[in-house]
Image 1 (cartoon, rainbow, N blue to C red):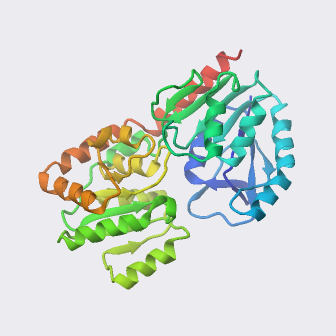
Image 2 (image 1 turned 180 degrees about the vertical axis):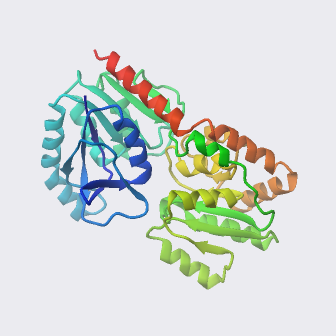
Image 3 (image 1 turned 30 degrees about the vertical axis):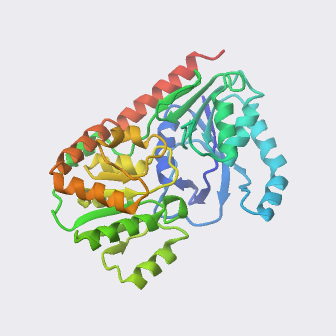
Length: 376
C-alpha cells in the first residue's frame, strides 16, 4: 500500500538520498516500515544537510515538491498567494490517488492538506498534530483553524488525529499520543554518576525567541549570585545566538558554554552528566528534549505549556517555571536543599522509560491497523 505524507518540513537531497530534520525522520521511518511505497509531499531546499538531519530509509520513495511559503512579511505574503494555486493543485492531485494519507500539523502545508482532505471524505487519513493541543492556549489563528478542522467529525471523516496530552472536549477523531527517542536496549545505560558540584544545567533547543534562552541565562546567573556553583551549557543554534554570546561576554559570565547543534550521541552524553535540563519555552507540543532528559534522570526545568504539566505530574517529576526569576530560583534552591533531588530524578526517569522506540512503534502499528479497519 502507498503512504503519502504532507509536511512543511524542508527536505534536502544528497547522494540520491532524501534528508530532513532528524527527530521527524526517525518517526517517519517507523511509519514507512508498514507501507510498500512512499510519497513525500513537501518543500525542497538547496542547502546542505547538517548534523541535525537524517535520511529516510525506504526502498521506494518518491518526492513531490511543494513551494515553501510563510506570512512573515508583505513580500512573503505576496509570494505565498502566488504559490497557493500550485500547492493546492499538487495536494489535490495526490489525494486523487489511492493511498493512506498522513498530514503533519500544525504548519502551512498541513493547513492546505487539512482543507483539501475535506473533499475526500472516504480516503484513509491520519494526522499528527505536533503542536500544543490545549484548547485554552493562545494559538495563532491558522493553528486554531487546523485544530477545529481536524477535531470535527463533520469536516474530517475517516481521520485519526494523534495529539500530545489528554484534553477535554475532543471528538472521536482524537487520540492522545506520544513520541520517543531511545530504544529499550539503551535502558541498560540509564545509570549515571553525576558530580555533586557544580550543578550542571543544559539548555537544549533553538537559540530563538520562542525558546527564551535569555531567561535561562538570567535564572542561572541569579543562582550564581546566591552562592550556588552552576554551569549552563547551551545545545542548539538560532538567530539569537550572537546576541546571547554578546550578553555573556559583556557580563563576563564564565559559567556558560556553547556547543551548537550536536549529534544524538553527544546530546545523550550531555543529559547523562547534567542535573537539570532547562527550557523556558513559550510554546511546545511534546517537547522531546524534556522526555529525553528525563530518560537519563536529568530533571526538567520548563514552563507549563501544552502537556508539560502532565509529563511532569504537575511538579512531582520536575520544576514548572513561573517566569519570575526570584520565585524560580527559590524553587530550585529549595529542591537542592531538601534532599529530594534524587527521588525527583528517579521519578522522572521511571516515567520516561515507558516511552521507548519499541512502544512507539507498537502504538503506530495500532493506529495503522485501526485506520485499515474503520473506513466508512
